[in-house]
Length: 432
Ligand SMILES: Cc1ncc(COP(=O)(O)O)c(C=O)c1O
Ligand SMILES: N[C@@H](CCCC[NH3+])C(=O)O
View 1: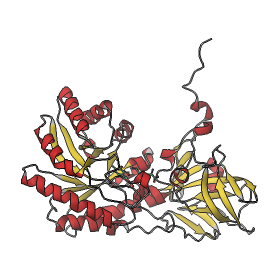
View 2 (view 1 turned 90 degrees about the vertical axis):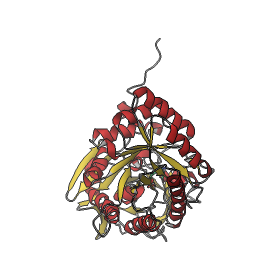
View 3 (view 1 turned 30 degrees about the vertical axis):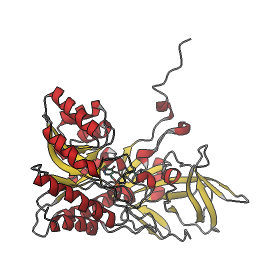
View 4 (view 1 turned 45 degrees about the vertical axis):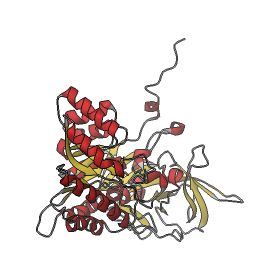
């Protein structure tokens, strides 16, 4: 039992039965025994359920598709995860040449790829153009001209959307707000029309859409609707000027529940946005949605073993074998993740800070948690499917953990644990 005041998030693929936690039909303890810890475990059922919730709202009551999901793979780019979404019909939102390579490696249709990012390199722009992506989301005039030059050199045309910075407060952690005028992202609202006029005159540029993404872990629909209204005003003005937009990219950012957050339900949220687009008379536009976290966040847990219990006068520490190197969110954003013992134990519960072995006091995974645990027990850190493994590092020469996908009674290794020797295999000492 965890006696924290914060409730556990609602989970699809992970359940507690008679005091033991399962991933679908497999006890988490069996996975830890077979594959070791720390270990990322994902549920295929949870991925599919979240995707289907979006897809349901993307199709109107007459069976017409009004929006498409382009999964933002930065949240979790394991090939098995992105392949699962590809098979369900998703396109992808990419932010680097590396992510483009992943999409191509699973055979994604280039026309299902949107390439975003505030600082795309010339090499990445050329890679995207050569691959034939659906659209490059442009974040500055300087980048627009860079794309024009590269497309001229490659003798191709570049399909672009301009990313609008609507100056809307997404009411999220300041590090992951992207739609305020003080953020580095997008083109300032008052400069967007001018930028479109300029884009329309460039020989290699095809203006195909408009884009907006206001932040991440957003738990209310209101800021989306504010941003959407502002974007649609621009689309109307562009139409008057003869600049036709074909698609409207509303970005991602819908939050999940980590415990006591209360984000809107995926289908309701998507319906609110798409209904607003139709009400304002823009139902003819193709809508692109770029969710990341809301598709994968609650589809993954991080398993870790208790190494030592260290009682103290100020604090009691539960020292585990996972750290900020496996899950950086608490250290970076003071983010909360539910933590549960994988098998309930009849021992006294104590308030602990759950911390890792890394040499930083910021290396904590949970603070002030009531846990009934003994050394050697397993803990599951919940809601770790998004921005978990992808933000892992090798700090302290720690190998990155394995990732496992559970599908019913079956478990697959979708990434092997790194070997320590791989971590310095490309380094060399100086010649004598
Ligand atoms: C442009 C863009 N699209 C989509 C996303 C996905 O966001 P989230 O994982 O919050 O849905 C992000 C990340 O914030 C982003 O920067
Ligand atoms: N890494 C962040 C989200 C960043 C979203 C990408 N723009 C998190 O863990 O919450």
